[in-house]
Image (cartoon, rainbow, N blue to C red; front, side):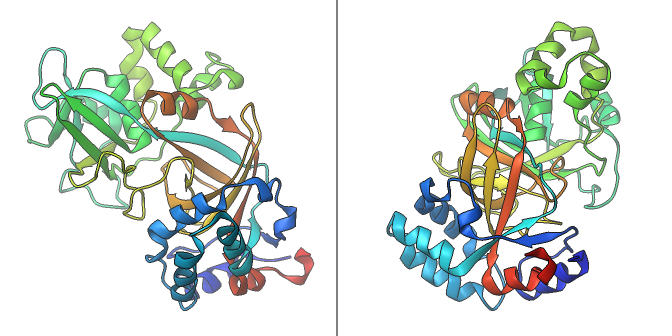
Length: 346
């Protein structure tokens, strides 16, 4: 049996990751991937190139150089992935796929009767990896009068879901737009409000979606604080002033992410920057080559991924209903892929 201890030194040697990977791995062929032939490999390669130069290791400069030449056509792009990579199944399916998006909200630079819920910058005393005050304490006003407000929003539920998404566009009353991105969190573990509503018998598992959760909260306005505080994790933001309107939000690699080509993963299992093949079941099946360019507080495990659906309400509706099974395979450079596959894996 292949063991997790083999994966970390191999990937570290390729400059693929900074954290160890845990779990089993099995080498597959491209012929084993469902509907591989039908995907738009050129679109996937375009997304891959957006962060390829950030990958560190002896193999990546040559791979990225060839990628620049291969992106000129769909056929060359497909051949590129098949020549330089091999698919590796890390962990045990079924996977859990969810969706996320970039919300567009109404806001104000100053607090008003309507716009009364703040989006905060990260306080200087909040350190990565350390636990700070929980959501309930923050919502009671511990950050008031410190000048940390980026903007004010007209709905606390929108602020809550903005924190889950990690980025957004705020349309101000003067016609300008502020884009905000993830700047850190308070160190408390993420707890799913949807799962809490299932445990309380309020919603069934097949009913859980962002829209259903929003609807329930708004039908019970007296319980808003209680419900939102189920999740003790709290996210802080930063203004992003140099992104063109057509660009996607900034992901965990510090670059714009791509609609339906970027996936958020757990970097303890999936190296950031590598291609990932998704086979998603559900009412809208998906077979697609994505790039692991983002992370998320709720994205934990080898077979766990969050699909970026784009910007705005339509993207939000599509993302909100995704909670599907399937499997996910990581495309690794050939040497790394074969090094991870023990003879018993075949």
